[in-house]
Image (cartoon, rainbow, N blue to C red):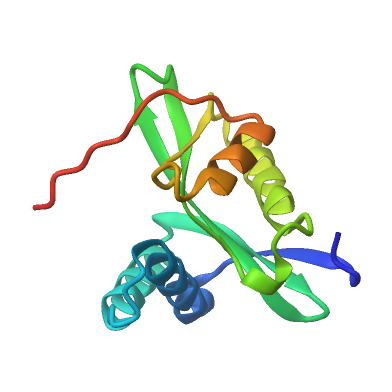
Length: 153
């Protein structure tokens, strides 16, 4: 656990730049490409957080942002109605394995329960390179349901 108290605060439109910067760090880490531009993430974060289309929380340790989670409110018949999706979850390397991500997941679960969601889904990074991330989600109660595919438009 962090040596200082951990505080969770809901994100607002004023946190768009912070969210974009954390998502950019996540994408760079997952892809291994440090040359990915930040500007598309900043535009998307401003739009999505500003419109209320997505929400999330930031984790602060001693007043410093240590991690961030973003959620999307979704709906599907297979899910029995409304559900949530963790679209991004990132904890700064120096705060990993200290309970920050678990607290952010707990926040997401509480949000989902309050909103009447039937489930929360998350796309874990590819195995075996990201086995620790996959194992973390399993420990947090997520079950594997198969691969996710995408088609860029």
